[in-house]
Length: 104
Ligand SMILES: [Zn+2]
Image (cartoon, rainbow, N blue to C red):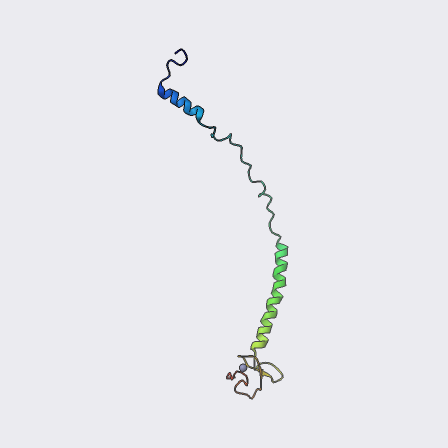
């Protein structure tokens, strides 16, 4: 009777609650490290990219040439003609491809 004479039930409850509550309160906020790892981002070496582009260009040019050589039929020299459809060699005098009967 001498211990807590003035505590009401509500107060006791609240006290118990506080005591029973596991310490889930957030731990002292540690200062988040600013992402310093991302900072030293070095710009991509433009020189290398340039090299790649330069090395890719000849390839495209080559491919273009190849397609041109294959596509060009009657404009080729030496009087040889190629069927634009199947690419087989045809005679300049031929009106139709002997292979796919494509009209020349
Ligand atoms: Zn043909």
